[in-house]
Length: 229
Image (cartoon, rainbow, N blue to C red):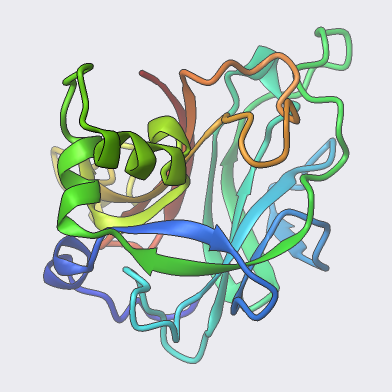
């Protein structure tokens, strides 16, 4: 496995960013990049959400000798309650340590084989945008309403900015002999099932569902799971 270079200070102090789609973006959203899976073999396709270019100064995570980190999610697994845990081997290879069960007889939660492919950039949120996203005020000024439209009415895809501490996400291989052996991780990205900007691509997933990614600093495992707001 590649060595994790990021510290807790790095991820928690990284600037909060939204994902913007641009032709020259160094990150890749959606599509079907040639990712190789080892460890647990997926019984059904896993969806690619984002490949993060960790050389971007806004990237909240860094690995030794690896530039591109794939963020993938089992959108079609386990009645829409899927989860996956994996470690990064190289730019296009991951080793899966946990994967939700796939039951072919379950109703399909995801119809698309892949999400729309777009180049993307990380755009640092302004103070005003962070203020709006952290507020539940409904009677907003004209300027704030304009800002919310740019933030997809609060459903923008987010990376970095100390999103949330996630304790005990699975068993941590670095803590085999410890009494508390669960992964302790920080969420570094989440993707609401928003209808912006691609329309209703998520099928049975509603906009209150977020697809979240957290990183354990002890073992370098990436945990992807669902959160309902």
